[in-house]
Amino acid sequence: MAVKELRALSAVEIGRLIRNREVSCKEVTKYYLGEINNNNGNINAVLTVNEEEAVKTAESIQKRINNGENISPLAGVPVIVKDNICTKGIKTTAASKMLENFVPPYSSGAMEKLEKAGAVVLGKANMDEFAMGGSTETSYFGITKNPWNMEYVPGGSSGGSAAAVAANMAPYALGSDTGGSIRQPCAFCNLTGIKPTYGSVSRYGLMAYASSLDQIGPIGKNVQDCAEILTLISGRDKRDSTSVMERPFDFSDSYREDLKGVKIGIPINYFGSGINHDVREKILAGAGVLRGLGAELQEFEMPGIEYAVPAYYIVACAEASSNLSRYDGIKYGFRSKNAKDLLETYYKSRSEGFGSEVKRRIMLGSFVLSSGYFDAYYKKALQVRTMIKENFNKAFEKYDMILSPVSPTSAYKIGEQISDPIAMYMADIYTVSVNLAGIPAVALPCGISDENNMPVGMQLIGNNFSEPALVKAAYAFQQVTNFHKRGGIL
Image (cartoon, rainbow, N blue to C red; front, side):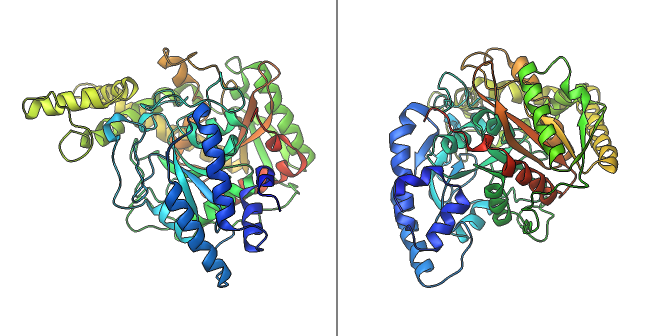
C-alpha cells in the first residue's frame, strides 16, 4: 500500500499491516518522522525528535517480525511520549528550564512495557511545565497549537501528545492525567483517551506532580487503539508501591455493539448554567446515541461537585510542593550561575528554573501545609476527597457508568485564559473529581461546536477497574458515529 494512506488508519490497523508484511516498520517510522518534520514547526507539539534511534529500533523490530515472533498487536507502530515520562537516553524535560538538558538513565515502567511490545519512540511531546496547566501554554519551550485551528489551545497538560496525534505526527501517544490532562486535550483535539484506575499503570519513572493523583494513560484515534495500548502498559510493577493490579487489562470481550442492560447515570447538575449551551447539546445528543444502542439512561443529582476544584487544587499543590522540593540546584537539573553560597543556590536556582505557574502552585501547597493552616485547608480537602469517593460509590450502586462533559467549553483561543488562573482552574470542574476518587474515565469525541467549529468531547466514568465496561460502551458508540474520524485543518 502507499505509505501516505497511513494517515487514515488507526494504530491497530497499522500494526496489522506490519504483521501482514504489507508495509515495513521502517517505512512507517520514516513516514511519521517526515510528518513531524513537515508540521511540527507550526504546531510545536514535539520537543525532542528521536530520529536516528527510532529508525534503528524499527529495523530491529522488523527482524523480529520476519523471524516469526508474535510481539504484540502494536509491534512496530510509532509512539510520541509526553515529556514527563522518563525514556532512557532520550531527553526528558517536563517542559521546564529546570530540566532543560536532563537525559534519564532509565525508562519508566510503562515505557519498558511498551518497548518490550515493539513500540518505536519517535520523540517527546510538549506539555504544560511539570504538568501544571490546562492549555500547554506554560511550557518553557513555547506554546503548542491546536491542529484543528492554530489560533486555539490543544488543551493540557498533555496538549503536545494530543496535538501530535491530531496532526498525524504519530498514530498514538502516551500522556499523564492528574486532573484531566489526558481527557481535556482529547476533547479539544477530537481524540479518544483513557484515564486509568489509579494503581493500574505503574508510576515508576513518571515525574511526580501530585503522587496520589497522577496516572499514565493512552491517547489515540479511537477507543480500540487506547484499549490495546492500556493492555500493554497496565499491570504490576514492584518498583511502584501504588501499583496494585496483578494482571494487565483484558479487553477481548469489550468490542461489541450492543449495550442492552447497561445502566448509565447522567448527573443533571453537571449540565447547569456553567456549561456552554452548544457543548451541553452535543453531549446530550451523544447520550441519545447510547440509548439507541440499548443503554438505560437515567438522570440523577451528583452532590459535591462544587467542592471538587478547590479540594483538588489544595491536595495537588500540597503534594507538588513536596515533590518539587527535590529540584534544588544541587543534585541535577538547572543551577543558577548567579548564586554565591548554598542558600542562594537553592533560592536562585528555583526562582530562575521554575515558571510562574509552577511557583504559584508550590507556594499554594506550602501555605496549606504550614502550621496553623493544615487543619483549615489540607485536612478539610482530604475530607472532601473522601466524600467525593463515597458519592461515586453510591452512584455506582445504581449505575454501571456515568456520562459527563469533559470541559464546560470547547477549545478556547491562545492567550484567552492564561492570565486568569482561576478561570483556567474552573475549567477542570468535570475532570478533577475522577482523579480525587482514583477511578477510570474514557474521553471520546461527540460532535463539533457550532460556535467555533472545534471538537466537543464527553466522558464515561466508571468504578475502580471497570475499564473493560467503559471501553465496551465507547466502542459501541464509535461503531455507529463518525465523530472520531473527522480531521482538522491538517
